[in-house]
Image (cartoon, rainbow, N blue to C red; front, side, top):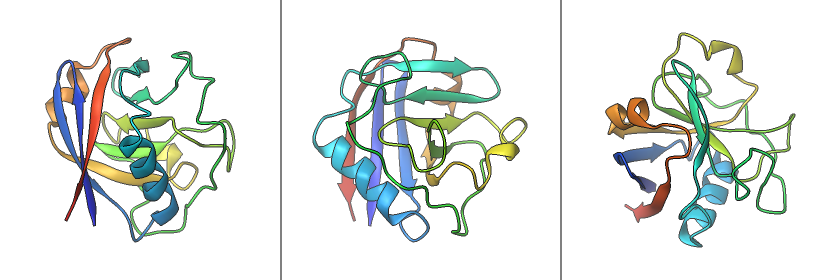
Length: 145
């Protein structure tokens, strides 16, 4: 079982993963994190009371790791709520490295079962609210339990 710490300029977000519900998405995120893919990338999309989004190597929202992964939408935890991490994509089965973290349930319910929820911030929820456009992901530390 994996956990993660997302280290940012504004603090650390501790994450648990939904490995049973989105095993391939979790494995992809863990691999990219261990490879240092996310280190130094920015949150290129920040919409208050909606999401913070990062994971684009170009910093524009159009980049990725050079491959795509399939969506995993049928698991139990496929509901976008405060702190939930989900894969960004440009259409079903086009995700790769970009992810977003939800500010709240208010404006994210329409994303349920359209974007793969693969984890949730359990500590450092206040950091989500402090992130601003262009803030950096310093590193993502993967912890194996």
